[in-house]
Length: 167
Ligand code: FES
Image (cartoon, rainbow, N blue to C red; front, side, top):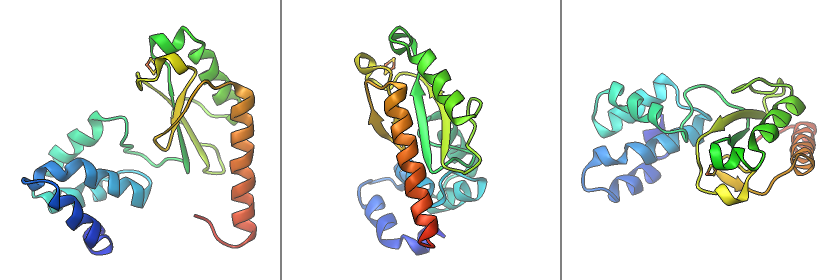
């Protein structure tokens, strides 16, 4: 349970807000960090912490692209394909990325490492093609850079597996 495992962090989050209902978003972020996605169970935990109805938590989680209501790969690649980025080749980049990883929109690679999906404007329009990977921006991309990034992460995962531990 988040409340037990992260008692200090939960307390620190609550300390920032005069009304504990305002802590829904940081608590959802904490839940996603812990579980990798926001399940119904995680929403129920957050709802209980802030003392609101779980359906209200669900509507917040559903509204923002930063929260995922289904399991994701270790690296969540959210490609902006909104118009300004599309004009700089984001659609082609997005398609090539999915092709390289062998996934459909929103899909996750069979090794559980990468999920690809498109999102709306991330406010880095002049640096397209761009994406956010686990909320870190990667900008002015091309497929050669992405292939290198993907293969590095695959090698890293293989090393961790060989050493008997996964993050
Ligand atoms: S349109 Fe892609 S970051 Fe703005």
